Amino acid sequence: MIDPVLPTYSRAPLSFVKGQGSWLVEADGRRFLDLGAGIGVSALGHAHPALVQTITDQAADLWHVSNLYHIPQQQALAEKLTGETFADTVFFTNSGTEACELAVKMARKYWFDKGHPDRVEIITFDGSFHGRSSAGIAAAGSEKMTKGFGPLLPGFTHLTFGDHDALNAAVSDKTAAILIEPIQGEGGVRPVPDQCLKGLRDLADQHGALLIFDEVQCGMGRSGKLFAHEWSGISPDIMMIAKGIGGGFPLGAVLATENAALGMTAGTHGSTYGGNPLGCAVGLTVLKIISESDFLNEVNRKAGLLRQKLEGLIAAHPDIFDSVRGSGLMLGIKCKAPNMDVVNAGYDQQILTVPAADNVVRLLPPLNISDDDITTAITRLGAAAQTLS
Ligand SMILES: *Cc1c(COP(=O)(O)O)cnc(C)c1O
Image 1 (tube, protein in one colour):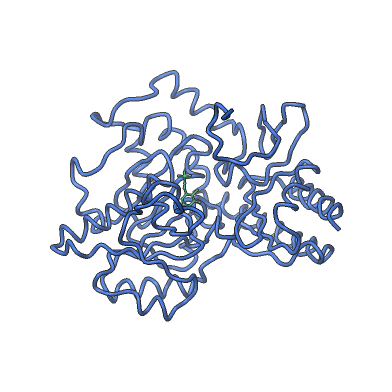
Image 2 (tube, rainbow, N blue to C red; image 1 turned 90 degrees about the horizontal axis):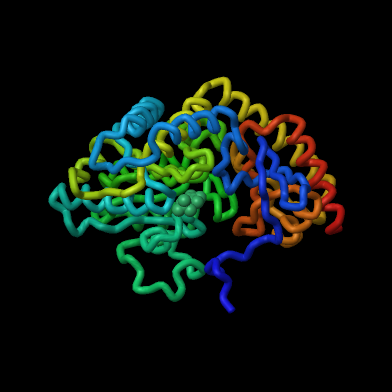
């Protein structure tokens, strides 16, 4: 008999009843150190006092109004986001894949309004992940995500990650946009080198194509900058965000320059829930905290500490681990043992990590994880590795 919950997930035999900072409490009372943070969602950990306060206050005032009306919380969050980034304008969604939907629509509408309705092609890369909507799976293109779900949304060209020749050959005057994660998450924590992001910007400019960054996972302070592309000094025309921005409340957004957004006039897009007062109130508190330079300095310091300790861990268990990669507090341990074995052994040591492609174990701790918890994490990962040796 089918489970009352549609069985699309293979779940670990754990269920959590409470969260506090970087820790989750299991129904049986055991405490787990959370280095997954809901796949990078709980950027400020669990039950952060400022977020609890914000959502409680807002819930007492007003949960939801339609986008038929002005929503001041949306306005405030949009102003803060545009103030902190390349963007001139923001549309709010409830998730990452809805942001992908709009990014694709926006790029195509741009060319349509410019008098090039046939300029629809969007270039993407293997190993990418843009969510599970029809546009998201067509953009990623992998068999794992698309098989059985055809006919797929047409117009996507998938290139091998890092193949510069293929990229140069593929971009043409039919290219509406290039869509890329500055650091691939699901694909195995694969950063795009800063030089390559610059090269992408140049290539897009040569052909007039739009550049779309998917910072759903690598954005919101994860890399040690507010957005990962800032390390490269260039910026996109359109950017998708979600995950960390809501700190656990479902919230996403598309950020765009005024030019890229030129086709998105009244009536061209909408969302019932997107940008509701609860989500935007929480989002603004998250963004205020994360965008502080002291906060990001601490992320970078902790990232250095974690990375250094991980190098030691890998050296101590060369039969289990291979190497560490990533940026800031978005780190991947390339494993020699099967990555799921490492994740499962971690459960036995009461530490949560997240598998990714390419036999990688992902670490996406809360950005405000303490130094003590980093030390505990390394001890527990070491104990997990010991049981696999
Ligand atoms: C998680 C993720 C998405 C999809 O976000 P949802 O909120 O699950 O729809 C899109 N892109 C990237 C890079 C992601 O990590």
